[in-house]
Length: 130
Image 1 (cartoon, rainbow, N blue to C red):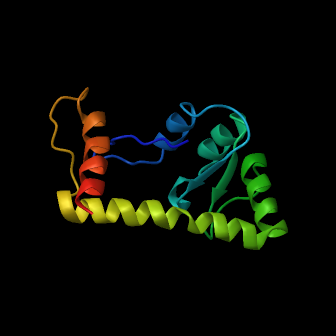
Image 2: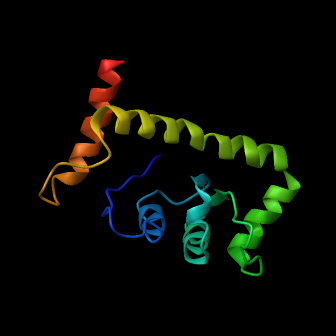
């Protein structure tokens, strides 16, 4: 399962992962994210949805919080698995980088209710042109 959202270009993206986690079905699963999304609230939201966070932590991350500590314990116990799963993010990053190169880095739809439709449409058009 995958979740995505269109965010304002002039705002921080950090609160959006916990909103997207709410759209995922509860149960076993992994949430892969960039280190920028490894905040306490995001890790807690992932844990509360019974998902496992696979987020590369920043060097100054505070480990004392339970959700982040569980993620770091998994990383220490299974470093190969953790980093192999984290590298899966590269597929998504590469796809979005290619789409941005082809279509530009902005959503052109002006109305807020049509913006979420534009991103999947771009994905379809990109894959049709490969």
